Length: 258
Image (tube, rainbow, N blue to C red; front, top):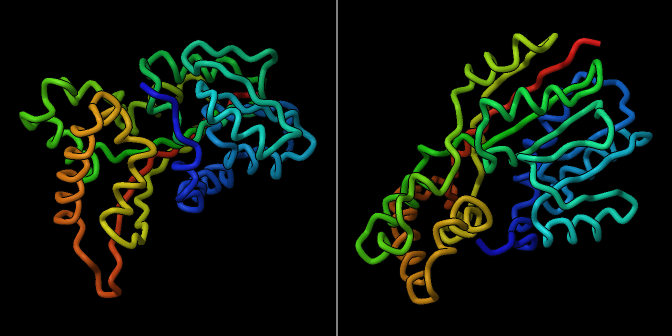
């Protein structure tokens, strides 16, 4: 799959950063020396961490060279590393491992979450936010269009193009026996969007990417046209002329005993 596009991702930066702010607001740490932003993207979430913990060493980690380059330009005084979350190991135990909208791309959550928690310093916190929109029209239509004869043989099984997330209660059960405190919640954001094309643009930077990456130029054009037609039917115009994009997200915070 081609590298991520920081410019496309950042077109809805305010909306994408809102859950990052709300996750960080619930982190139960007054101070931190070592903070890691896993899946830092273009650095919008890393910037929040730098502001919250100005005396900490904050490190951003991402497996996308384009995202790391964009983050370095945004925060030239902050260290960023190119690494895969699935095998990442910190140089020293972090006080905070923060992962905003990143772990949904990493397989093996049954082992991943306990492993990340085990890397924390005593009293440290694992803070995670992940999209929970697999069953929303935006993502259901990705799979439905992929199954059409024009695309099925090229895309393959659409169910394998995204890592399956676990129920929120399962994440609690994975972490509760290890943690001093576990805080979990679920939020459905309602984003005001201008047009169906804007919704397509939103998901093109993330969830839609694995689907269209396998298509040639004409297939991609045809896929997106059919996908946008379906999105227009799924998201009716509201009273103010806008569309409402429902976006559920899971939040998990686990604190290690001091």
